[in-house]
Length: 59
Image 1 (cartoon, one colour):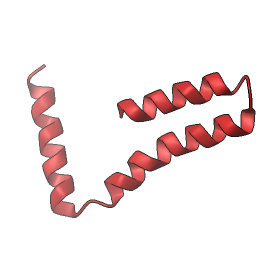
Image 2: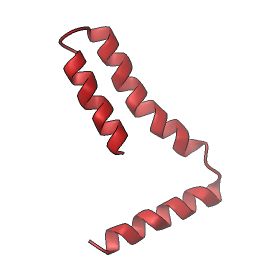
Image 3: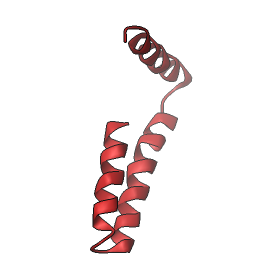
């Protein structure tokens, strides 16, 4: 999630220089973590959700 947010921020900064390059960076920042999550097995997704759930409880 942090990488996706950083990619979007970099894309917004690049928007001043080159709008097409910026759109590519923003699309990649959103698509790569999504693709990585979708490549996980259902058991791995469950384990990842459980880890995230435990982190929320400890706030």
